[in-house]
Length: 217
Image 1 (cartoon, rainbow, N blue to C red):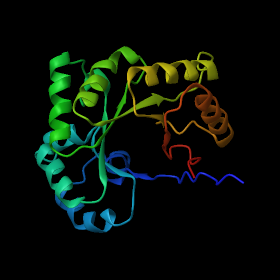
Image 2 (image 1 turned 135 degrees about the vertical axis):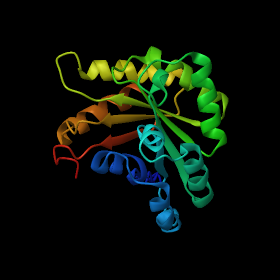
Image 3 (image 1 turned 180 degrees about the vertical axis):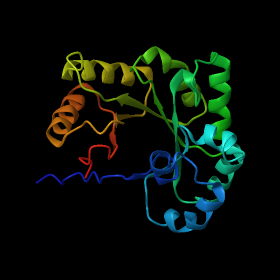
Image 4 (image 1 turned 90 degrees about the vertical axis):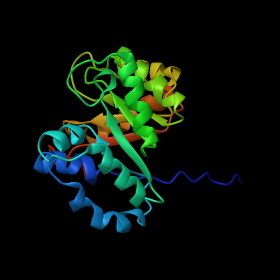
């Protein structure tokens, strides 16, 4: 009898980015984070998502902190855990499209300062806005995770998601993430979606869901 291949669930902890972004508008300071890092590092997380998204903007505009210094301090503290960031494709961490060389340089410096995994997404799933960031991350030997921005509507069929997943794999992603930022993904829909994606791609699949509707657990 063939031995069963074990595929344990891997947990990405997002408390240092997404949790306080949602609960207190990303106002947690670096000094508030540092005391817990040693304990978090011993939990055994696959990764800790601690940078990117709104953390960069909030650090500069409201906390008067250097976001790069935060990243370096987190990297120094997390000795056993990969660090992950959220990256808005061609928008980087801002609200406009930036030139390719700016995207490339930002990716280079993010990885040089401690990021291992870059989760890249476009809010409209326009994969043209992912290409530069994906190529730059691959060049810097970082892990490329591309996120599908999950939503509902007549256009968003299983075939739509399967088609995008195949294009993402062909683009050079290392893993794929279902990014359910509005808390719309129900358990039965998740089963259908993951099953369909597995028919289209061999990439590992992450699920990132928000508690907005209370359905996440």
